[in-house]
Image (cartoon, rainbow, N blue to C red):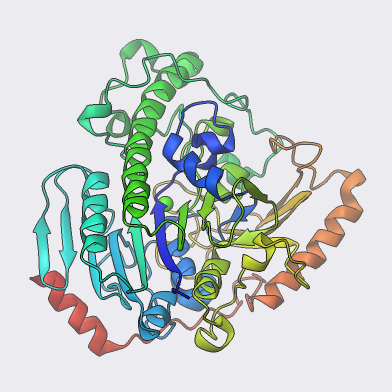
Length: 497
Ligand code: CA
């Protein structure tokens, strides 16, 4: 029997509510929808730290930030923690990685476990981007999303007929600053994009820490984001509402145009797999490293535990094993991906990737009962009061019915974290009664029992994942060093060329 191949497509900051398979009100993504129609739409996949680098490190290693070292965009991937790509390569798979890597802002973490790789330095550029490979850095001509797909198709075409492969196609789009391809600039006429129902949320019942974040479309989205100055008549507190509406149309137009390129290019990739006779036996995944606020609660960006940011879209097609048109609402996190990919290739994560904290969810897709499958997703955001968005450090859990969040009030010496201490605060949302998460009921006496149970569950999950709850300034800090000096030197030499 031929071995299963993996094509793992991931974009950056693509929220599920901008994919028509998830019922988007703002756009249509026919090629992404094809994956859902021919496979499964995952409805409760959550990231464990809603920001680029940490999510990527969790996916590769199957571990939380405190294990793999990537707690923020300023930290490096700990080379001692193995990745699923290394395991597959060792098992005889051909492996490749193209596009956004973003593990190590300063470039000290290079891809490992790949026969071929070519990545953007840091965030990368949309137009004529530089790309880095083992030979050094080179400027590529064209639009980033097309380039990453071209490299992927070329690599696929060069494979031998029976070689099993795993290819990571990691787009930088639709990350800020949302620069679309010229050919999509006619899409989404001004005023045509519906505003979310929660656009004018006053966030009144939320914690002070959340009310203080700088992620508002009204006041924090700037001229750089909009690629133009904010007109005089829209400035000032009296013009807040009109200014939000104006900015929203520009922001969403650019964002959705970037998404359009992804959809086109996923179509190209699916077509090529079909033409090559690889569709049946290849597991194709589409996901994004986390979600994004698309005007929800008046915000853009991510970081927080509200569903638009916490949820990762995940569409999977694998005709040999997954029935077409399936849905899965089991609670899954990005630390489960590594074990799942290995499982699909017939490799046991427990023995081959023993550091993984996740579990394969493939049995769930086959409709099997899995004992003690987690009934909550544990989350921890480490960057405290970061210099751009001022988002507070926090942890919490999301179950099918509730979400409990603790803004514990301080950073833990994480690079990029501020030492500013806030008053610790809690939020609790009843997701069944209030799916839009508009009303924090943490201090509502009617929810006292629910909150007590959730606090117990939160502690239980922290123990399960061996994460230390914050107990004050004396809480022990994770030991993340030292790194392998020889590897660091090799990486620095490649980036210096
Ligand atoms: Ca991201």
